[in-house]
Image: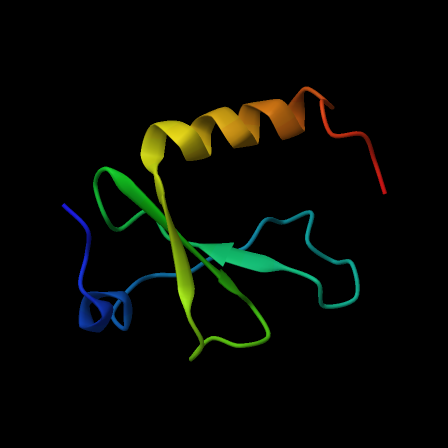
Length: 71
């Protein structure tokens, strides 16, 4: 089930402790079973992208494995 926009306003957003890179950060929330909302930390009132939880876990695992290289 996809959360409604008003539900996102009550979300507990967080960003990685590794996100000290000059403001190019995203925030996520784990408040919604089955979906992971992601937003730009510089625009908290802006839109959020919603990813299925299993897709988000796969993405994070790929990043941790270095599959996308480094910047």
